Length: 75
Image (tube, rainbow, N blue to C red):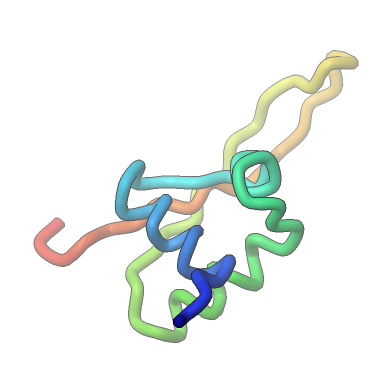
């Protein structure tokens, strides 16, 4: 019996929803190092783009975070 890894869960999320942020990965899967998982997924040949988003946090401070977008074959 093969255990589903965190990397598998993130990849399934990307295929199902198209994108993921570190907050989503932490909340949904307990992943604290999303950038490392994305690095490994890219090394396996997945076409994942990084875009940066700037928003205000709960204190009104500007914060920037990465959003990873999966481009499937044919896109």
